Image (cartoon, rainbow, N blue to C red; front, side):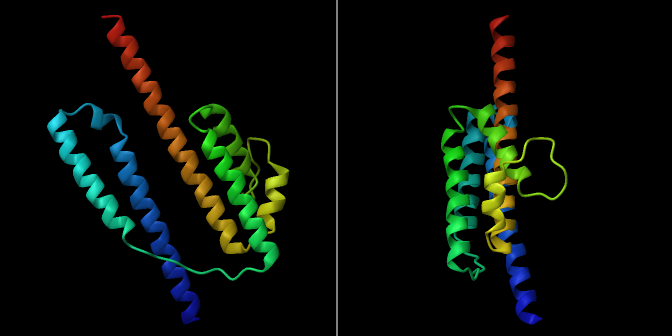
Length: 165
């Protein structure tokens, strides 16, 4: 029981680290950062970079025991996600749809988007802990894409507003 409690506490800490990193990145990329004066922006970026470095210096790891089939499945799932991430900047909307399809393969409730059946079969072959990590990674990527799309829309709106003045 103590071993499982330790593993669970460590997993919670791992998720907290991911959350903090995502929060710092979100602040750095926020519209509010663009609206403040250059001096304050530089100071906030220095602070954010320092916090990012300190957060990244914390190493948390829970090892997962896998058989060769689970290792192979994790490698395949990671590779599929990585390929979509590489294409994000070129085709944000298409990549977002692909990520949604992969995420739908990881959830039990009915999805509003088509489920990537091939990816679902791969994820099911992964160890349970890896399944959870894959789902969390996809959720983080989708949040990041959503935030990026919002920032792009805001920037486009500002360009239009400035162009009409």
